[in-house]
Every structure is written in structure tokens, then in C-alpha cells.
Length: 287
Image (cartoon, rainbow, N blue to C red; front, side, top):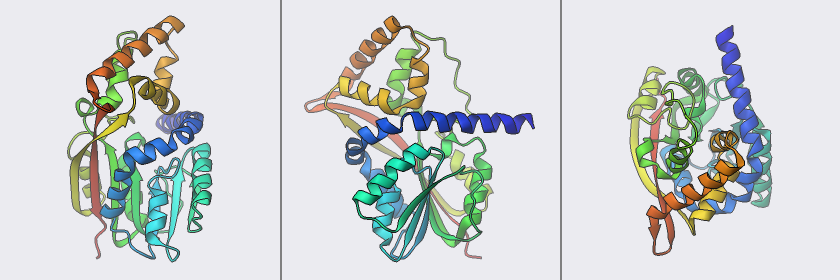
């Protein structure tokens, strides 16, 4: 029972965190759509989406990659996005309405226990969600259950910290002020599924076949280090939580150090921060 309470507490904390930053995500939505649209297209391709499909998007947030998927499957198909944070989904609904998409809906829920009938989706997609789940093997089994035989899962999770300066630069600075314990590699978090074979192995144990994974390298570009910092503090709930532990003077100093550190990634037209994403695809057997 204690373990279950701990998992419930983790999920409740995540719900509060992501609801808190929903406004920031909506504020930066156009910017990140332009910067990271390639991930949505990759997921849509890896899931083999086609006209008429019924698709489940796990951890939809403000609507990615669900919105692109809705455009891909067309009026004869449908997309259902699920996320813990109702306020994030409210932003997704507004975007769907502005795009005049009538084949997409969103609902709150926990990805680990999917409230859907078995074999009810043609494909499942997920961007930056699975590494935050307390019980990834259980979620993998649930994904397999709700997929139709022959259906594909396509997921994106963050790869190794040393390849993700976009994420780790502020953490390195905060460690200069706080005595942070080393991250628990088995606990929910940004880099929970960073190692090769982690997610792929869980999916194979859940019965998936044709499992593939690739470390996908790219960059996120900002006009300046100051703009990077501003976006970080608007959307990154884990960074916000750490910053809350700093004094006002420390916050000012940390900001200066983060902006200064970002300078090493300057190019002729701004800042180009490396990211590394682990793309994993898997198929539910036909038999």
C-alpha cells in the first residue's frame, strides 16, 4: 500500500507541475512548434499512420504530436490525446479549434492504466512522456493491450545527458548552488530511459516485435541566451522546482551563469543547443 501511495504522490506532483507551466507552454507554443516539428513528423512516420486510423497519443500536453496526427489520418480517422494536466489539454483544445480539426479529442488520465478496450487503436504515439511514468513496464503492457494486432507504437524519450546541453546546462549551474543528489536511474525523470535498450527491452518483454531504436541528434535554436533562459523558466517544471530553493541573490547569479554558459553554443545567427532523442518503434504481433 505504501508503494502505491508513493506512486500516487508522484503522479499528483507531476499533475500539479505540468498544470503550473501550462501557460508557459502556450506562450512558447509557436516557437517550439517551429523548432521541434521534425519530431512530430518522425513519430507520425514511425507509427505508420494513414488515412482512417484511430490513434492514441500518450502525454499529449499542449497537443503534440496529436495535432499533426489528426491532419494525417484525415476526417475518417480520429485522435485521442491523454495527459495528466487538464490545463495543458485546454491549450491543446484551443489549438485544435483554431486549426478546425474535428477529429481530435483530449482527456485527462494516467498512462499507466489506460481506460480503453483492448485492441481499440490502430497506432499509439508518445513524445517525451514515458520516462516520467512510475511503472513503465506496466504502461508498456497497457499499450500492447489497447493496440490492434499489427499496430505500431512510436515513442520519443530523451537520450543521454551528455548529449543534451539544452537540458543539462541549467542543471550544471544549479549544482553550483545546491547539493543535488545523483539522479536515481530507476526513478521517473527526464533521463529515465536514456540508455540504449532500456525502453526497447521493456517493450520486448511486453510482447512487442520489430523493435527498433535510434539516437536522433538535432538542435534547438534561440536568438540569444536570455531568450533560452526565459523559455526555460516558463516551461521547465523540474528546473522551476530547483530554482524555488535558491535565494533571490542566488537566482540572479544562476541566471547570469546560465546565460553565460549558453554562449559556448553561439553561432552566426544565435544559439544552437544540441539535443539527443531516443526514437523507439515497436509492433504488436499479428497473431
